[in-house]
Image (cartoon, rainbow, N blue to C red; front, side, top):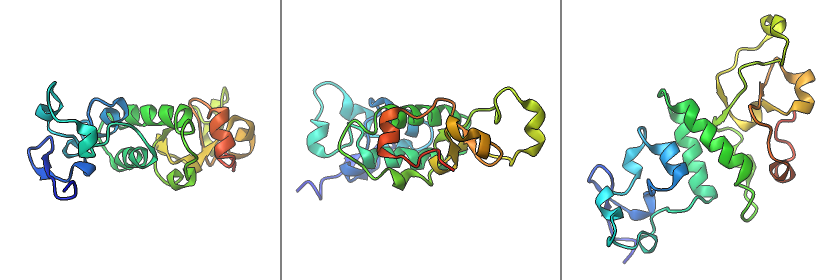
Amino acid sequence: LRERLLVPNAHGLFVNPATLYSQRTDLFHVAFDGRRTELFIHPELTEEGGPDLRVLGIHLDVDFGAFKECARAVHNASDANRLASAQGLYDWYRDEITRGPQVPLHELDHLQFVPRASERRQNAPEFDVYLHMLPDILPPSQMVRKEFESVAWTQRGRFVTQPSDRLLLEHPSLGVP
């Protein structure tokens, strides 16, 4: 029965509820609001006294699959809010993604959702002429950790905030040239 149930999305189109996300979940709001609003459930269904969204199969919590969809949305975005969205996703990636069961973090390595520091070599602007031009948002595979900046700063982006120790335990190659 649940496979055949359709509910309205934010645009009023009836879709499979398993393809929808709650706008009340901060990370979903950061990733999809203003760019993928068709992924949100219709606002009237979120009102008090409405149906139990969890029973319907709507994404209320962030798991690895939902995070990956958020990362894809930012990767494909071209709007003015993309950098702010990327910062919100990277913060969650850095601090939260390893709190649950082990996940295949390498599957995210090609998606652009990590904002890079604007300075490519800290306190050395005279070396900017040697830089390989990079976009403001990069995939994890194109970032460099602080301890490796001296050998890769011209080719990779510096993290605005270094990855957490827990993230590096789960993904030891993150930020390594």
